[in-house]
Length: 109
Image (cartoon, rainbow, N blue to C red; front, side, top):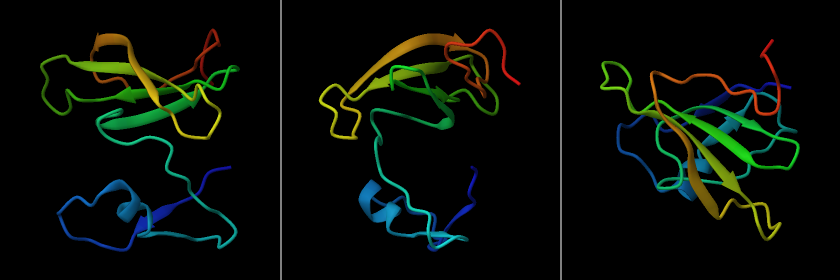
C-alpha cells in the first residue's frame, strides 16, 4: 500500500528527525509513520526496500543532479529487534543516479 505524506511546515530549514516526523499528515488517519533511520545513517535517500531477512536497503542519490558519480546503496540492520536500524554499511558505491532497489530478486517489475 502506498500513502501520500505531506509535511505541514514549508520552511527551508531542516528539522531534527523526531520533530520532522511530527509534521507528517496522512490522507488516511489510520496510517502512521515510524522513524527507523535518519542522517548520518542515510543521506539523500530516494528508494528503499527490505529483503527477506528484514535488512533495509537504501538508494542514496548523492550525485544528483550533476554528478560526479557518487550514488550508493546502503544496507541497514536492526540487530537487536527494537525496530530501529543501528547498523549501516555501504553495500555498493559509485553508482550513477541509483533510484530503484530489488533485493533478492532477479528483476524489478
